Image (cartoon, rainbow, N blue to C red; front, side, top):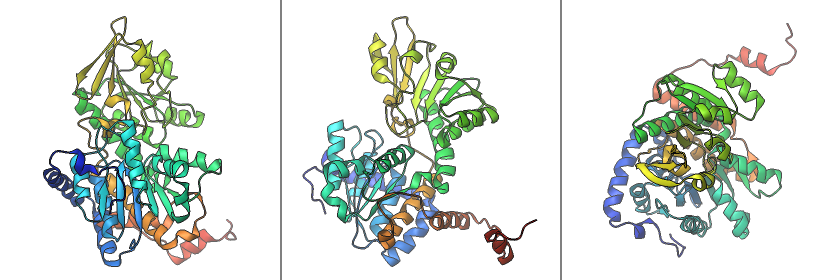
Length: 429
């Protein structure tokens, strides 16, 4: 299948066969707890809805994602994939994917920037007809460097907040030339993946990386979108004192009304034991904040890119840096204070050495949405104009119904009279 000169993962690791065996073990464990993908596997294998498609993906290559990738391949597609973050790939899982006859994986953990983008180009060399992105790097590369492919691309899907922000900006500029589903913004993603997934996995990773408790600590959460809400809720549930920083007055008011302290970052940073950024924006924690932080503060990022904490400014201020623990880099300042950065300021729940990403059950829902969106593009792609599109509501509800069935949960349905009432305007009081 490979058309690229850039080598797939097998050429980067010592024993790809043993690695693939271990990666498959991780995938099998995850799949046991992914009833949505299990249900879709039955449908996709039988109906082959993706036959003839080539899918290019840039995702966090770990066991849960791998089950989505394999589902798409079982549905008839040829799939090429690489990572969307240099530190979130599990090489053994990448090797397991590459061992599949219809999948080529270029994802390798710890690559430098040049190799990272070379791998994205390698995926694009397969001439995908559908793209699945987490962060929008592949879509950007196609538009900037491979515009000749756009006419043959049916559409794409975008997984995360940062990527959707970038896509909407691109769309507003009239620069997005094929349709993309904003998977991040659909209820089955935002209400579960962003809230519970980010909240639980970020705090669990920080706790395992540092071996420290949240109880009684001042935990500063930068941003009160869905991800920030999840982090704040879960930290509060572990008896932390949560302080929220926000730039949107309505979200700041929401955080205040939900019982959290709300302060500007400069005030919050002076009190923080832990700061977690969740904004998807740059320069959230900068030099003026480093100046007021207390000795031993932990700095972690739960946004997609490593630009929320200004590590260049912190490096310039530091007189020494050293690895305090696996995944914790200490920056010692001239006055002796030590500011501890987790996972190089990258997405902490995936980039830290101990990280495993969101819980399996949560990602089952998000990847279920991805799968049915790819199916929709294959079946009805011509109906969508270039630009950002909401996930069709019937697809989102389909995933919710599969999950409820798997959990043995029944629920009410509208009667014909109720549906008529909701659809009419003339009943009055």
